[in-house]
Amino acid sequence: MDDNMIVELYLLRDETAIEHTSNKYGSRLRSLAYGIVNDTQTAEECENDTYMEAWCTIPPKEPRSYLYAFLARIVRHISLNRCRDRSRLKRNAFICELSAEMEECIPAPDDVECRIEDIALSEILNKFLGTLNEKNRNIFVRRYWYLDSVTAIAERFACSESKVKTTLYRCRNKLRDYLEKESYTL
Image (cartoon, rainbow, N blue to C red; front, side):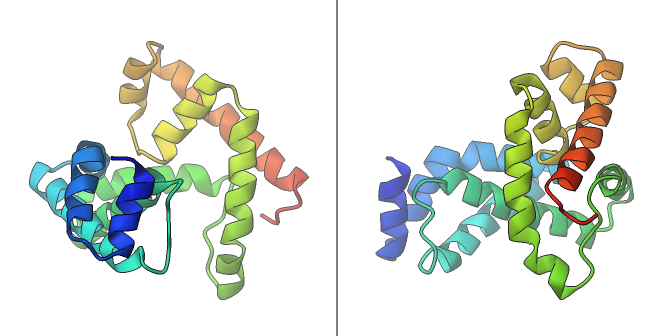
């Protein structure tokens, strides 16, 4: 079933929408959640919570052309919150490490004005990702969206860990320069 039909079922408040969503995207959402929480049962809980959140948010929103991205964003936030709530020291340290890497380029918003600028930042980030070649873009997204380890990325792209680290370092520097070029205040 295509995304447009699934969203239509949500809008009609037809509970089969969740079943169709699960059949189409369940394994990908569970995999994304597992990469963050590192626990099969918790990943399944995050997946189920994602369906509930989608059920509650789709009537005002209609993510017909970006349903997976919509669901992935939800499951990612739920998984990160679950990870923080359970105080998994090892995993939290990993998330802090990634946050520190990105803080070199993008400071965390700490006031309402910064949060309003999230939309502009999102557009700038999408444009920036479009400037990267496919391999560098995929490495960047695997690290900072999917939270893959450097080792896992190196295995996925058949390159050394030092190559991945260098690529990420250069991408972060390019991002910082791109943000400055776009007049985004750091």
